[in-house]
Image (tube, rainbow, N blue to C red; front, side, top):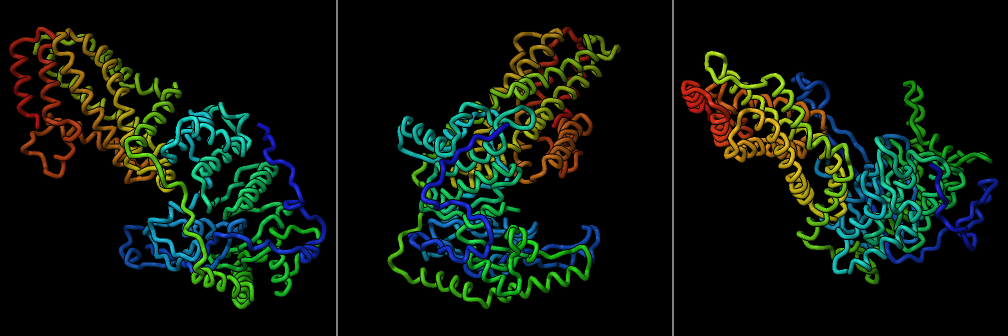
Length: 599
């Protein structure tokens, strides 16, 4: 799908691309420092500790290794400026953005401080200050562009009328030239939607709705063609010119973008090799004996110069030594000293404004829950495949059961008890497993969105979890009713017991799905959760039902699996089955004996 241009021609030559020899850039003035807001990263270091070797090797597990991800990073940037962070894969670019935004968590050791307008940020202030656009776009595929932004605005803005919120959404869409796809679905790999470049702009628009002053972008051009990537970068430059601080990481930018960045930082193996203006960059590397050749892309040239070649041990030692020499020269340069001086100067200024927080007047808890519930419900209802799966998977399993059992026998000698016990195993064991499969297939996408939006400060994770639970309840009840209507009425039933039969199946179905949500909150890999879910389902049927071993003789460690098949559920299920047909008195007595074995 072709991309439509969304930037007007640049006036006054501010963003014009300078072509020709890079040495001619030295006559250009640096960006004026007329900004009010400032961001400083002061001596930031980050390290993680881990065990090397297989888990079964006790000797290896006892050895703890420490890896330094970031090493003494110091940066300074003011509003109205844009900073580009370069570096090869594994150099620490994303980790640096995570450190700036307070998203590293507690897995490692983080040292240093982050200053905004000379004030050190506390941990709870990071999400209220920074907007962070991740490398991957986490959007609901069955919503339109307008709906996606509207729901985000409803979560972020409080006290405004629907007309005001709608106008703000329309203004942001116009700013990013999304009006022509406003009513188009986001889409995914299963069905078409908007292009990857348009999807990236939707992610940016969602952040702009909160009116941030500091914006971080992790690889915003990844997966985009050259023209679209260039458009995204030029738009980010325009954002910075509107009194914002913009920092982005990028791979292999085009040479035409070189002079658009106010500051360029280069990372190598977690060390800051250089950070300064394009003019300072040319002068610094030329002073180190590495001038950029004419008609070469400075980004590519300096990236190759500061990368470590690991193809051979000799090349690795040689290139690493070169990087260390360049890094040492930078730490001794006037450029680095000025960075530290700017950070110290802002710490002592008394005329700086307060920390520029995002829109903090967000709706209340119930309002956010209602918005989340409406959003996930609309996303589900538009996905015909998912709705069909939720409503029919229990029914399909029930049809297989009926096909094998057909009509139950009434005579004990002809297998009446065995048929009913087998039927009980199938009914009670199938419904929780289908609930588990629903959660494994549907919740990971919502969890990814919840992780990002909760870190953005839109809501708490438990609110998304509760919204998911509430929106699946009617579908679960309807699916069990369809399943019960086919299975129950095909087995000589009594109408008075239909409610007991349906409730006995609905309870383990819901418990199975909710238990899987808990597992998905602890284990990030859905494949691992799927395996654990299968084991829990089997354990629940074999142990929790009480038909394999009595409750008193069951090991205490396995008794917890009975949560899927509690005593009351199975008892009511057996009671509803005992009058399904004209079963003989002897058969009813045997069923009563079976009831005594249930936990």
